[in-house]
Amino acid sequence: MMQEKILVVDDEDHIVELISYNLINSGYTVLTANNGLDAVSIIKKERPNLVLLDLMLPGLDGFDVCKSVRSDAETKDISIIMLTAKGEELDKILGLELGADDYITKPFSIRELLARIKAILRRTKSSSANEEIFKTNEIYINFERREVSILDNKIDLTLKEFELLEILVKNRGKILTRETLLDKIWGYEYVGETRTVDVHIRYLRKKIEVDDKNPKFIETIRGVGYRFNPNYN
Image (tube, rainbow, N blue to C red; front, top):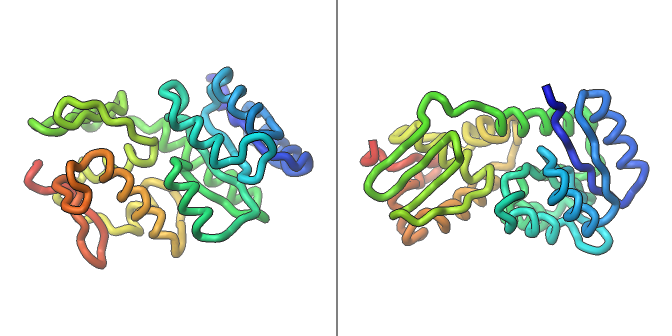
């Protein structure tokens, strides 16, 4: 079986060496870059399964690299974990809004990083065989191909946006708490970070709802979480 390919992007050599060593020992193929421009070039050429992306980079910073990946139809589904010394909430939210799948602040433990990588790659590979297609006169979802259309207009979603929509649709009518969504989508305990879910839901609504302030598909259950409109059962 082909090894999963991970690109490590950081301008600090010792961090690249440490992460690369542990990834290789865990069975991954590793690519490296020490600036944003090289990272974008490698991503387009090599199509890694996942990118570990530092925020503070020469050339293009991590935000710009993330925007470049998500704006390209051929790379938009590649998973991204941002690695950064910045821990401010605004930086974290911006990274998630730009399409990062996860965000970990330096210094971090290698064990935690490997767990997050494994969780994201497991979700990426997971089968949608239980329900391949969901279709109404307004919305069409092909789970296997990760295709979404609203009123015959194709909608481009990030991986995490699609996974949120998928779990809500497959549990339509059932209220899912923010904690449940964190656990199921991110695959580990993301203690105290339920804002992550809210950010992704907000951007998902902007893409699939005609009026995201009065959503018809994804309902907010105040103080609890979210559910997909039970009228679409």
